[in-house]
Amino acid sequence: MKISLAELRATDRLVIDFVEILSLEGQRYMARLRINDDLLTLSSETGETLLFRGSSEAKNALSEFEITAIELVHPSAYDEMIGLPAEKPDAMRIPLTGDNT
Image 1 (cartoon, rainbow, N blue to C red):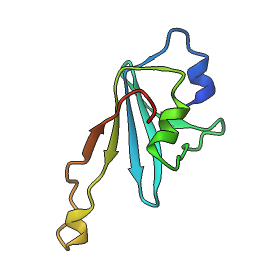
Image 2: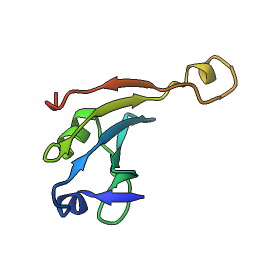
Image 3: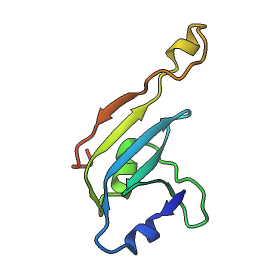
């Protein structure tokens, strides 16, 4: 499911339980939000996934909301790069602070 910043702003007493800022190829980042039991992709008003140029830009976009926890998720392509099967290795997860630095 997708959600826009305008939809987030329209929600009363919103608490975002968890934010994953996912590192993508091409130095782009996207945000996935867990609100209650829903996993939502932060999207534009037209439904396109919002892409950011850095994790701080994604954090800044969400800075007006109460967020319980936030992580930068960096998938590993190491095995694939050295010729091993392209299995889904565990992603590197880095907890981020809420100070937008």
